[in-house]
Image (cartoon, rainbow, N blue to C red; front, top):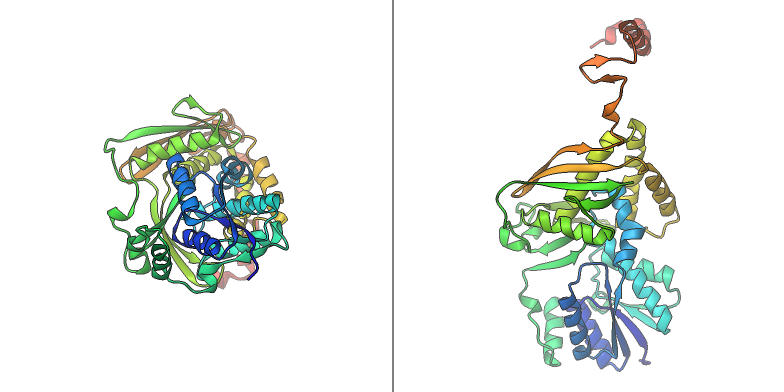
Length: 399
């Protein structure tokens, strides 16, 4: 086999560690690239760099695309209140697209012959990576050793150990993907439809028992303050909300849905910040958007989330949906109040200059000021006309 210049999408996990070592041992020029969308700590990135060189990489690079991820997708998921199956905030799966774009960009910059990733043949990530590479780095070979050789975890561990790299990969009961928009949890009880995850499966645990209030302030749909503290960096604001919510163990759940390849999939997750932010934003929109703004925004946002999850981020319709979502946020301003407690929260209310409840025309269930009693009766009579026409012809169908 001819020796190649290969970029490996390197997370530091078992599959990508095996990939780096195997390709390097075969004489290839391996560049380990870790695309960080906010899920890696500085300590983890440092460890990744050390391990990449131990595994035989010629070079290592961290590609920080956290801000790009926020600006190009994450903020639109907030605008759209995107939850797949009304449950999952499309956490790490949405980050894969931007990691893949960053890897493809780097591969083009250094003139790589191939890009390698560690996805298996039974999941969604193989599609997200392959499709992005095919579009963003045409002509560059895609290498997937774990998928193509149908490798087991034990086979990969044995290979690493035999070549002097020891790690405790095989003993892990759960696999985790940590991101700025949540942590996914696979394995263990997730594989049994009758079971939920035990406490020890979660990375974050309840450390605060007493209830407290959380206030999130939005301007044009974007977070600008948390508990009165202003933030210009939206990522830092999200991390602040995550810190508050994680102390209560908020955002835990399991999602069951259809994978891109057609089988059902189940994943556990913990996502305090997404759950709190989306529900706060949704509540504020109830006060500040018209009925039809909310309705049509929900329709396009559902498609946006589905396309993003199913590796269609590069579909040309996505910027069009983003334009609509962006326009819908012009009056989504104000502070949302939430009450936090262990393993849960509730929305309390909003303080907004664009609160449509503050209408001078009337107060629901109290007093009308914009119409008379006769106006109301006439409106109701006209509204009932289609029904009166139908049941006048078909009286036997009255319920």
